[in-house]
Image 1: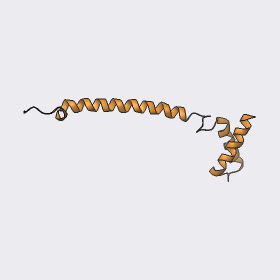
Image 2: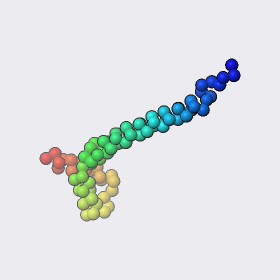
Image 3: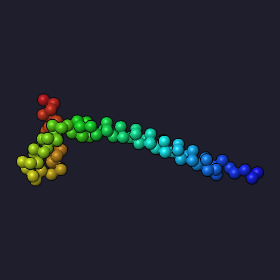
Image 4: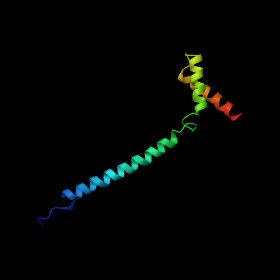
Length: 83
């Protein structure tokens, strides 16, 4: 009856800490590769390099170009790529 419960022992919490750390590391690795895949240039979320270069050119020619107009230029570049 004087035996301590398993959850109150130091070795139990050391094992839990190791498993939680390993699991967190695994999740971090999975999320890192997923993020790299989603933020690749030319994907749905990030425009292709040609669009980015076109934006740089447009901004240098017309400094008043705002972020709102970015979508107009992006759509024009998509049309240009599809032709």
